[in-house]
Length: 260
Length: 254
Image (cartoon, rainbow over the protein chains, first blue to last red):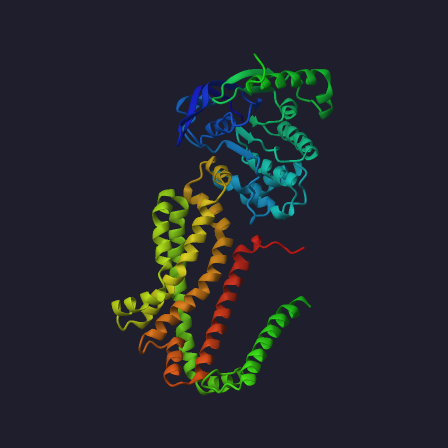
C-alpha cells in the first residue's frame, strides 16, 4: 500500500549562532497515493529539510506533515530512505545490507523469506550474483543500486530519495533512472525525489515542484505529462524539451536571475 | 611461500638485531657489568627459569587485568563522549590533563593508597596508563559517524541502542583495535612501573629490580627480553582478535 503525503503550511527554521535561519516558509504540498514527485530548487533551499520532515526525523516549527491523513509525530516503519551517499555497512554482505530494514521493523517474515525478498530485489536491479560480495568490492553505481533495494525491501508506503544519483557519472546515472522505473513498475510506493538534475526529474516524476530560494516555498508545480512508459529517448522529444525549458526558466527565477 | 615469508622476514630481522647487539658489545670490549650481550641471556634465563615463569605469569595476568579494565572503562567513556557533545566538551580537557601526568609520579601515590595490595596497585597503574587511547578512539569513531548512517535506522523507528549495536559499534571496531594495540604496550609499561617501585611486589619488574640491586646485568637484560616477548605475544593476540571482529576493514592489497 502507499500513502498520500501532505504538507500543510509548513514553516521551519534552524537555530544558528547568528540567529534563526528560516528554511521552509509556509510550504504546502500534496502528493497523491502512488505518485512520484520530484523537488528541484537552488542549492541550500531546504530540500533536504523536507525529506527529514516527511521521514519524521524532525518536527516542523509550524504546520503539519501528514501521511495518509495522519500527522507525522515521529519516525515510522513505513518509510524508506536513500541518500547520495549509499551508506552501506562495510562489514555486511550486499544481501545482509539489503535485509537490514527487515531486521528493524519486525516484518514477520522468516529469515528465508527475508533473504528471498532481498534476492528478488537485487535481481530486479541487476545485482544477481553479487549477494555475497562486500560493498567495497562493488562500483559506485552498484552500491547505489543496493542502497535502493535496501530502501524499499520492507515495502515502505513512502520512499524518500535525497539525490541518490547525484554522485554518479552521467551514463551510470541514466542506467539507474531506468532501474528506478523498473522498481516503480514492480513496487507500490509514494515517492519524493530531491534532485538537482532537471532531466532526472522529467524522466522519473509525475510532477516536479520547483522550490524558491531559502526560505523555500513551492514556487511552481509542473505536471510531467509524458506517461508511465516513457523511455530515455523520450527525453529528446519536443514535449520533454518543452518541459525542461520550462523547469529551467523556473530555476532561473528561483535563483533571482530572471524576473517572474 | 607467503606464510614462509611472513615468518622468515621478521625472524631474520630479530636475528640481525641480536647479531648487531653482540657485535657492538664485543667490538667495544664491554664487560658484563656495563652492558650484557645476547650470549649472556641464555644462562640467565636457565639460572632463573622458575622465577621467570612465576613472575612472568604474574606480570602477564596483571597486565591483562589492567587492560580489560581499560577496555571496559575506555569504551564506556568513549561512548559517553561520542554520543554527547556536552560530555565531550566537559571531559576532554580533564582527560588530556590526566593523560599528560607522567604515571611514574602516580605510582607512589597509588602504592601508599593501597599499601601492600600489590595486585590491585599494579592493575590500577596498568589500567590508568592504557585507557586513554581507547576512550579517545571510540569517542572519535562514534562522533564522526555520518548522520546518514543514523538516519537510515532512525527513520525506521530504531532505538538508540539498536543504532549503536547494528551500526556504531561495528563501525568503531577498527579504531578500537588500533587503540588497543597501543594500549597493550602501554599497559606493560604501567605494570612494570609499579612492580619495580613496590618492595616485595613480585612480577618481572621486581625481578628486574633485584637484578639491579645485585648488579646482575645479564638478569636485567633477560627481564627486558622476557617483557618484549610478552608484549609481542599480547600484541599478536590483539591482531588475531582484530582479524576476526574487524577483518572487513582490511583492504586486500593490490
